[in-house]
Image (tube, rainbow, N blue to C red; front, side):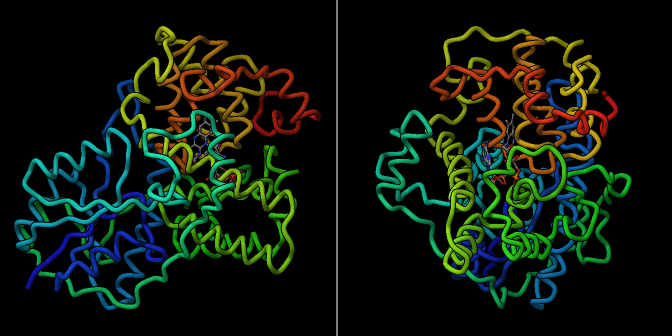
Length: 439
Ligand code: FAD
């Protein structure tokens, strides 16, 4: 008997799961699937929880459904550990006689350090890259030669005709689980069996004003909800109007809302692409369908940027030579609470805190306000988003903040948004500000 550990990270799904497939075909006879939850009291250097209540609740729904799906395959109870991977995985491996862990490759410093700690503990860790639409290995340049600006990246990808791989089907069978002694389960704070999971519920049900009401069945964190959401988005032909509506501020349909499930991994980007292409064949391609591909390419670009620059993206100066911006604790506190006195910014920050979601347009406006108007440290803002967003994605969050701060790859050297003009353009009748009590 030989056991392989499969460590679910930001890939909480069974469809299109190359890392899980690698574990299943590794030659092992048994599989122990594991998730490690961040400690509830883990804090950022800025003094608040690294993972806030919304993200915890959304991820918990993904875990519950994964647990049920795996049980339906007649197999391993997903082990949900309340301990960091460096503590939980070596103990579990030792208890079941495993030497190998298979998991998703994540090219960000915190996540790389998690893997390094496992290796230092003597485990063999096989990481599999599968979070991007396009495989980095198929790019027509070396990893450190990524085109310096997005447009050039996109044009080169399109000219070279690089397309995503066909998504893998979900496995119909897993490997049997090994026995894990109860004392070890207790030591790693693990819970086994769907019925026993103590995972958070949505904080206060759902805020009716939310553009992504994750407390409702259509928007819960499960893989089934993710696939159903994608199917209904296409069935209602919303891609055709995406380019015209994507700068909206309220409601479920102005943008795709794929991001929360992409972030936990409940939805594969290659599945989106495959279904979008089928949609284009059946109903025609237009600017809207193209623009969804365009935005998903941004997501890939920020992943590739991490492969190229890694920890440099996390320096106060980012990729620039700009001096670090000093932290502005009072301004930052007012910004987080939605109490700056700027009505559009305050409405947006209240929406973020109340719902865990915010439109792309308003993410840009509030990030710009913290950086250029309050003159705060962009890294505190990025950390607040990390804490609050249900769709927090390490690559997209870090790189978008850098971009607006002029410390990333923006050829224009940063983006400053005038909130008064933004309100005139996107909330001319004031309904958004009234919704959040700032007008
Ligand atoms: P749509 O407009 O429907 O776009 C479709 C998909 O394209 C999205 O789901 C997303 O995967 C991708 N996409 C769209 N815009 C971007 C972008 N600017 N950068 C990268 N990918 C993009 N997105 C996250 O997923 N997680 C984050 O933590 C995150 N933090 C951000 C922080 C700031 C300061 C800013 C300005 C943007 C951030 N974004 C982040 C990008 C963007 O705001 C969200 O992806 C988008 O609002 C999600 O809603 P949607 O799925 O309806 O997007």
